[in-house]
Amino acid sequence: MRLPKMAPSAMDCVRDRDHARDVLTAYYYPEIRHDCDPRVYPDREVRIGCGVHLVVSAETGTIISIGDHAPAPVGAASPVLTPVRRPKRRTHGGAGTRVPTSIPELIERVRQVVGKDAVERTSNHYVVRVPGASPIGIAANVGDWRSIRNSVRTLRHYGIDVTRDV
Image (cartoon, rainbow, N blue to C red; front, side, top):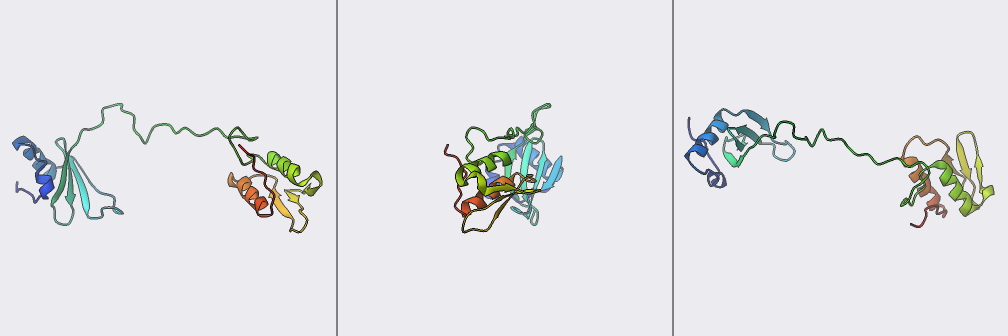
């Protein structure tokens, strides 16, 4: 086996003769070999073997860095497979929310600010009529979680603030 080129910082990482043999084995006969992230390091690859982690230039074959590699113990929790905690969905507003979280709550707040007669129901929408402004439509059935926030933003544009002070 021929000794590969090494960056000076990589040469400083070789501890002794046995470690140098492990580095050569990982370089020429890696157990795992893959490319680095092409968006960050398009010309580098990783070689792992004999407890050694090498970063190698794919173009020149120069060892850029050397590190120790210890495989994860069997049964260790994988960061990819751990369950994701999802927040509980609020249906009628909750403590700490400034924006209404349901259409009935939004309509109730609009009626408190503008008046009961300013809101009327059509088949699929609520229509808010404000003097000096175009009718404002609010969807009666929310198809997306952003719909209520978009409606609040539209109402605020016309001077109707339905957010609550927390």
